[in-house]
Length: 194
Image (cartoon, rainbow, N blue to C red; front, side, top):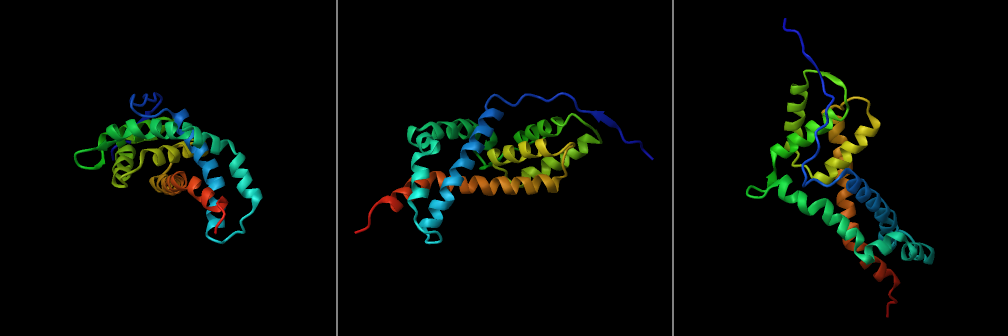
């Protein structure tokens, strides 16, 4: 019987220069959480699921988020977190995520735990293959991995990473809709009907 090799993974490689910083990605997540906080009640009011209240409308109108949206600051952050990454993360000729970028990302993620793994090459290889098959969104995958780094003491299973990724992907999709529609909803709710 062959003995398993234990390898310590202590060095975390730096991300490629085109990747957004962790600080930018966490700020984007925080801004999107705020956006969804205001968007969901406006959406429910527009759909008739909640009564239209001046309190909710005024809360959004006076919010720091609305000022950030109107100044273009949030759009600049979105661009910083997504524009450059598209050229690196996506294989623009084929339209899918580059396997090499997923490999760098997952390697960095696994190594960030700083723990020893039995057969780390096999763990990373399988996780890279699985994650690449999801055709992952960079921002959602970043959010999922950040959440797992804070909640787990050792590298998570692929299924746990997949669950965290699906949650982050859903939140990101809802946030993109909110970014496109929050001002329109607000205007619809505040404009008097004839």
